[in-house]
Image (tube, one colour):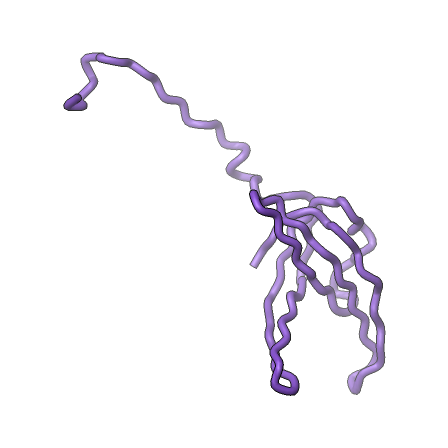
Length: 115
């Protein structure tokens, strides 16, 4: 899945030691540009994505997976990014196409409307 928006906030880098070795997680808040903007907390695990160029206010498109897991009778959901592209590509192809034009010929010979 993909989501586009503006980086609202970068959360502190988290690191730790697990049974498989060291881990690190960088979370950030993305704000969508919808009519009713939503804020989504997205996590980047490990060094798979270079986060050095991602700063608050930057427009990005994030490809992500959603995963839920159960722990002690409660469910937790993670939004994990696997790709981040700078800029907003959501309107890319559609924005470059010309808008259709219509001719308004009231009462012309081609008018086949019954009223």
